[in-house]
Length: 192
Image 1 (cartoon, rainbow, N blue to C red):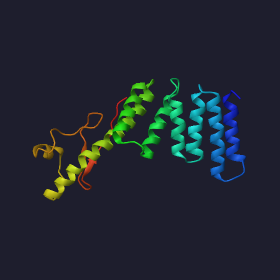
Image 2 (image 1 turned 30 degrees about the horizontal axis):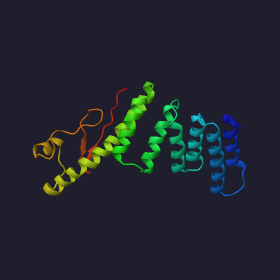
Image 3 (image 1 turned 90 degrees about the vertical axis):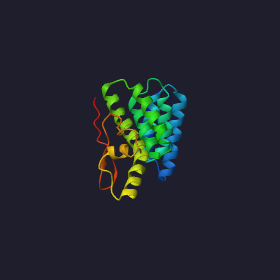
Image 4 (image 1 turned 30 degrees about the vertical axis):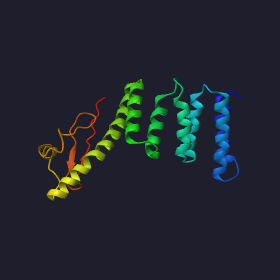
């Protein structure tokens, strides 16, 4: 068939009514979605639906990523599936932090509404903060190891020559320092 509902309803029925183990159901549902995507290559909606079914119904993030990647190739695909793909890939850890930052920057450039832009900026903020933690926390721990306490401010690291300037988050705010854990504090203040 060449219409969305035949595949969507078939997949729902298979998930609920089909006999067999969950793995057998998953294989049957993915075969049906693959058949529908092949029959209707212009339907990003079917690929998105398959992605969500795999993620929510089968708890299979890797398979959800596969279908989401098919969906986002279509120029008309809704931005929500692009964001979902980024979140799932971040959770799967199948790319590095720099890859994630590049992905979220590209997704931000493609955002069409203020809501899409705000949600995407939040993801970009988080991955940049993750990268900055990886870079800055070793400096904090080294300072504590040498001097016996966590620095009270980033200025102490600037004065000792370990940093050129006080580090700032994606929104331009200075990072804080948690004196108990000696780790960076990112106080997310994203403006819309």
